[in-house]
Length: 116
Image (cartoon, rainbow, N blue to C red; front, side, top):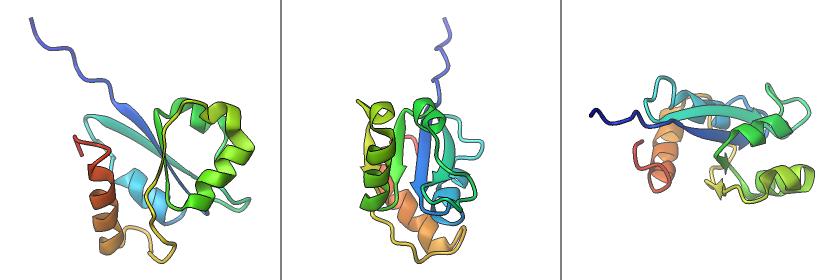
């Protein structure tokens, strides 16, 4: 009997504006066989602003900085209950798809996503 396909884990990446860091993280998972990724930002002017729906969809939430986790807990405490929130500690100093940002994301995500 063939093995059942592995369901993708749903990953949500959060930064401030959803233009560079979280969007780069989302792109790392385009066409990935084991993970689905979305991204959003916490600020009013974000490209895509995080909603309760994003958090409900996600199995795990990755934030770039501690303040992003604090904002999510303040605004969406009920939606985050029991959901892992991982701080990747990536400062806001990289452009979209910058090679160093991609390398840092892969390094920090490896321990959390074994099939990366």
